Image (cartoon, rainbow, N blue to C red; front, side):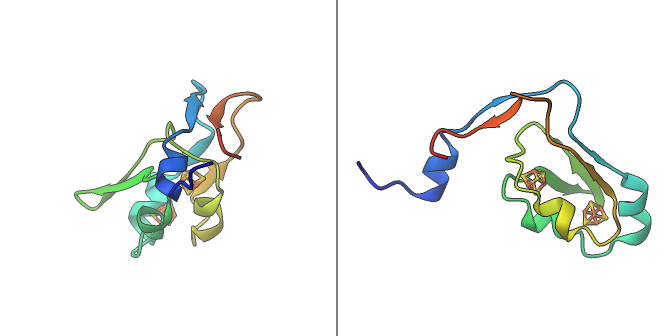
Length: 93
Ligand code: SF4
Ligand code: SF4
């Protein structure tokens, strides 16, 4: 089997997006409390972006790694797995 790079493997994933977001961000905490906004730099799927100093979040491409939940210093993230069978589906484990 041909060796694949990590980004090639991730590009094989598919998503069955849950209509209900499985991650909810408290933007008020982001705005008031957070200077470093580490989620923007550490989310491997690029779900967090910074626009005009404000956090924008989209859950659709989330790979459910849990990084944002662990690294957020202000408990601004409510995190649950998507409903059973929804969310990311890995093709290579
Ligand atoms: S690290 Fe937490 S508080 Fe800071 S911007 Fe990201 S979600 Fe908001
Ligand atoms: S769980 Fe991982 S992929 Fe999903 S939003 Fe958080 S850091 Fe990004």
